[in-house]
Amino acid sequence: MEVHEGSINRSGYWAQAMYMFEDLMLQPIVKFENYDPNTDLNDDAQNIITFGANYFFNDWTRLQLNYLYKAEEGNEVSNDEILMQLQVKF
Image 1 (cartoon, rainbow, N blue to C red):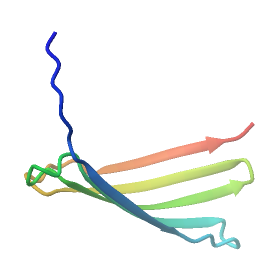
Image 2 (image 1 turned 180 degrees about the horizontal axis):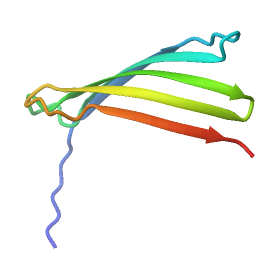
Image 3 (image 1 turned 90 degrees about the horizontal axis):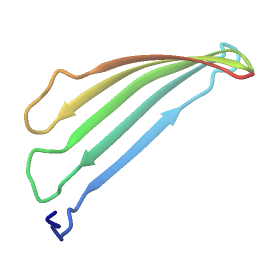
């Protein structure tokens, strides 16, 4: 087995904003993420913007719906996602 010593410099950050409309039981969310897995290489970073909403049926049940727009710096790939999750607390 060969061991390679060295380091890879990575970089990333994210920011998120949300607001709760209590009369509608609705919580819109916007999130921006940036990740560069190797800062020494060009065109390998990725940006993800999430547009979503949480709907609260009651204190124990929440439905989440998110759209993730993914943008790669190098070769753009068609890999956007729509995610849905139902969360129930017992």
